[in-house]
Image (cartoon, rainbow, N blue to C red):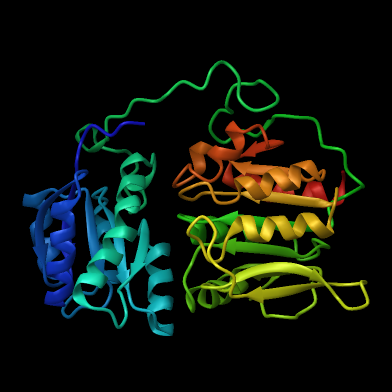
Length: 384
């Protein structure tokens, strides 16, 4: 896709250092038009009508009107404006950021810790530029904060590249919105799936918050998840999901044995894989400090490969909303070992990156909308 129109950005932060750094970065990005700055949420709201931003970079903790209050007001007014949050790496910061995502923020970045101004600015730029590009391309970015339809003047003008008449191994057209498409017959399997593994990124907390509660509490298999997030945030995510789900949800711990009906979230800033116990009878979680893959830590590819080693022909793998293509190489390994692969449909992804790559590579068995993924998972562990 080629974006024809710049994203209009309003920078909102009560700290002058970050307000200046982020606004300087916005002026450097070719896809961005910086329309203004504000040092708290109240001032930002007063400027929105005249500046007409498409996107706010929004600090969470501010006087008079904080970032969460801004998001709530944007939802209330249904303005169709997006937000990328700037968060701190603290337990309180992680909980507030998850709340911001629940309120409709597109994504978040961490404010750099203990770095020089120049290093911190470079880090923010490296993180935020692909987010803004993904925001501009997303079908749903402008609707996250409550606007049902995107005003024509706010729609990015795009050109779609043709993919040919077919899609995937089944040679079929993409599914219509909210319909499930089966691209292949079920792969050569050794019976029902005995594990579910999920890879997900941008838009993930909300997607998981909708999908995982639809799984039955007696699913009968373990679920292992990589959600791209930094340390502390994955623990807060697991705690939040645990309150919503019939399954137990927890942040994974090194050395624990996999148990049925538990969802294990990979810890942020670490890699997670499966290994065999000393007696070879059980599968254990191994948390490592191995390097990032695809610039991700935790990495979906890293987890998927290890699942393939121990559950040949007995795995259901799910790839969901997110930027980039982390997970595609791991899905190729799983596919060659008889796994059943489900991808989230484009029409329900906040960002159609991570599902798109394996779909185009012909690795996927089913393309399902978000509200049907749990059904597909359940069938794969009970009826195949």
